Length: 369
Image 1 (cartoon, rainbow, N blue to C red):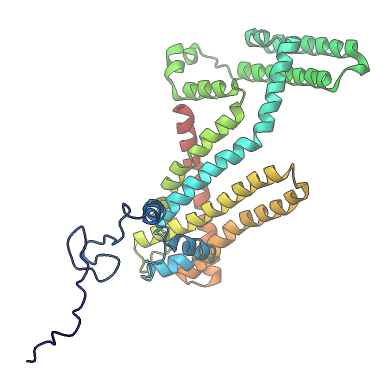
Image 2 (image 1 turned 180 degrees about the horizontal axis):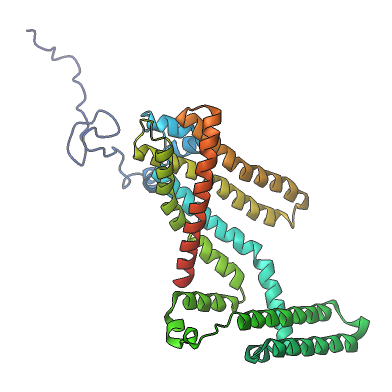
C-alpha cells in the first residue's frame, strides 16, 4: 500500500456539532438535528430562529398556504409521505385559528362601534329626557307597563311639540332615541312578567343566584350596561371559537371514518384530512374578516372600493362548501354521485354537531365571564 504524498494538501477536518460532537456533513447534525448556525453569533440567525420556532418560516408556510387553495392537494401529498415541504396539519390549524379569532375580534369590534355609539346616544337621551326606567322595573302587571309606556310616549310627544319644527337634528334624534328606550323597556318588562313562573318554588333566590342560567343572565346584563357592551359580548363569544373547533375536528374525523369505513385509511389519517379542511375554512374566514377591516378603512378614503371587496368576500364564503366537496372527492377518490350523497349527509350531521357544540361553548364562555 503506497504512502500518501506528504506534499499533497490534507483534507479539511469535518466540523463538529456543538451539541453532540458528531462530525457534520451539512448544516444540520444527522444525529441530533441541531443546526450549525448559532443565534448568538449572527443577528440574522437569531431573527430566523424566532420565526422558525413558531412558524417554521423556511418556505414551508408560504408553500403550504399556496397549495392550501387547491382542494385536497396538501392532504393527498401529506398522506402519501411528502411531509417535509409542508407545515404539519395541527400546527397550521392552530396558527390559522388563532389569527382568525384575533382578526375577527377586531372586525366585529369595528362593525359594532356604530351600534355602541347609538346606544350611547340612547343613554344620553335617557338622561336628558328622564325616561322612567325604574318605573318599568317596578311595574307588577302588564297593564301597569302599558299605562306607563303610553304616559312616557305622550310626555315625549309633548316635548317634541313644544320644540316645534325649529328643533335641531341632535334634539330630534335624542327624543327618538328616548322613545326607542321606552318601547324597549316596556317590551322587556312585559316579557319578564309573561315568563314569571306560577309556583313559588321557581322563585327560590338561592337557586337562582347559584344557577348557571342566572349567572349567564347576570353577565349578559353586565355587558348590556357597558358602553361597548355589544362589541365586548361579541368578542367574548368569538373567543370561544377555538374551543369549538378543537372539539369539532376529531368529531368530523369520526364521521369521515364511519362513512369511508371500507377504505384503508386509519382514524389519524382522517384527522389529518379534517385538520387541513378546517385550516382552509379558517384561512377563508381570516381573509373575509381582514377584508372587512380594509373596507372599513377604505370607506372614508376610497368609497367605491367597498363593492368589489364585498364581491370578494362573497366569493370566499361561497368557496367554503365547494372546497370541502372537491376535497372529499379528490382525497377519497369515489364517484361524484356517491361523493355528493356522502357529502350532504356528513354536512347535515356536522351542522347539527356544530350548532350543539357552539351553543355549549358559547354558554360556557358567558357563564365563566
